[in-house]
Length: 206
Image 1: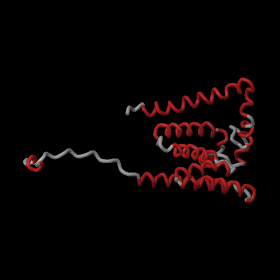
Image 2 (image 1 turned 180 degrees about the vertical axis):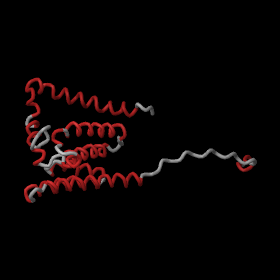
Image 3 (image 1 turned 180 degrees about the horizontal axis):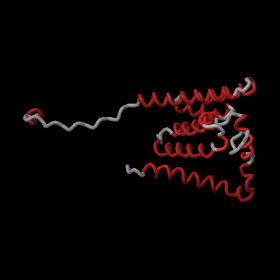
């Protein structure tokens, strides 16, 4: 296969899907303008995901990014978008087409690690994808969401619980990835050149 074959296969899926979504939403955009998104924009601001939002710190959004640099609510969204685009591109180009749920798990799980939502029922999608793929280390994500949700009001300054939970979940995912990569079968060696047949090969054949 040519090097451009994975790109052609990815484009054959992404471009038609994008066109269908755009054409499906076009009538609503023309008639309702920005209300086509419903309360999504208000929810993003309310939950602290909007750039410059003060609710991000109160709700412990971007918990792992917060460990890298303070005040992620001012810069997190562009960084997350860039990271997710890279992950999606990697899945489309290098993922296993026979196991699409594996790529979906990687993309969805990465989004959870970066955005650290506080409602654990969002992670039911991760649970379903884990059931399909069998990579149990990803179950740390819903457990982290549960820990953050339960301790949000039960513990004074309980943001550290959610941060710790997501950090442990991320460490478990990386550990599982490293172990699986280490146990992966080695690439088959090139066959050795055939040795010259014995001189009496005709007699041996007969």
